[in-house]
Image 1: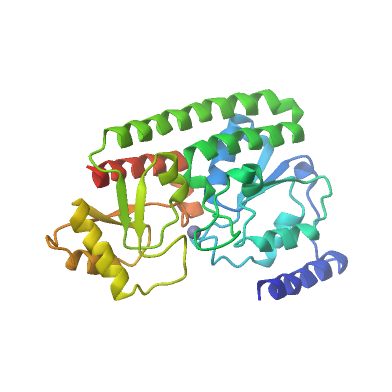
Image 2 (image 1 turned 120 degrees about the horizontal axis):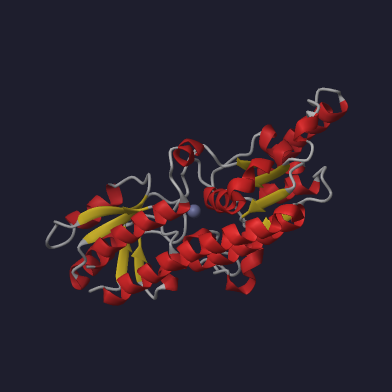
Length: 310
Ligand SMILES: [Zn+2]
């Protein structure tokens, strides 16, 4: 289905280019670096790495309207943007396979492409219950983020050697912040009463929980499209809340609270809180412009985790 859409969109693109409808680039933008990131975390890392020198670059967030990676449908404008940018950063998994299709038709042959999953290589996690489907939520590990920032800074430096030193030093400063927050997570988990989180929802947080040795229970693995949990699932999760004396049931951002509420109603105490851990899958460009950053969300998540584990 998605593939058909791409071919459809590309045929318009080609007609646009050869039919004289393409808008000519203004000469001022010719040497401006064009960077496209599909997901918000990569956009935000790149923004930090570009820093002051970023005035020379045009940075675009593709998934900018709050629709997550798994449901996003590219527009014709997106395909055009991808086909002639200088640096493209995407996840490289099942959900954004359409990006690879767009790359096959790229007009900029010197384009650099960073696939986050490829950067991780063997360190990428495999979705439970699948043979080889890689877990796409790679940004939910601060340690991964450090690796990605180095790679992005390197790619930017090759594209604009005159700014390479600045990009590297911006990246180092940012990585220090990531690393400090990672230590805070480590300390929080080390000092916590409990080492288990329980989600009445989907569970995109394996990279995060495995970084700190936390166990998890969830209604659904990964970002399953399922929305109905069986009675067995609900009652087993409620039993786990009772058994471990968990103070809260977690959900992801924008989730329906129904499953979490039903779990709580099936516990003995029925007084657990519902808390939200943000998986950064629905940050909009407006949010970003209003000051939401990868670090601010991950800091807020640490705050939530502290309450969930104590
Ligand atoms: Zn997801």
